[in-house]
Image (cartoon, rainbow, N blue to C red; front, side, top):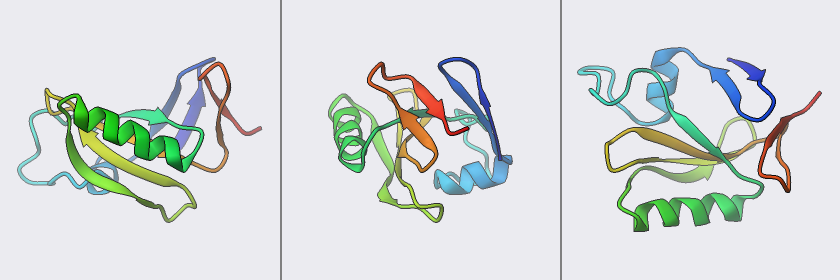
Length: 107
């Protein structure tokens, strides 16, 4: 995977099959609403991840994968928005969410 700091948003590139597997999306048939892209809602804490997932579900999203400990030391879960586009909600080591809500990568 590769991360690119764009001065606020961060672009992360993953292999399609690994991202689909992480989001618990099937490889065949490929979902029409998944083109190898997810949006990520980066959080400052594990509690915030849980709060965001609860908020999304309350607003009509569907849970794809409950929040869980990740293999890289983070905490994340996935939801699908009302149009079925997958989102990751995550707190991860080396990625800081500042008071301004902007994502900052470790140097």
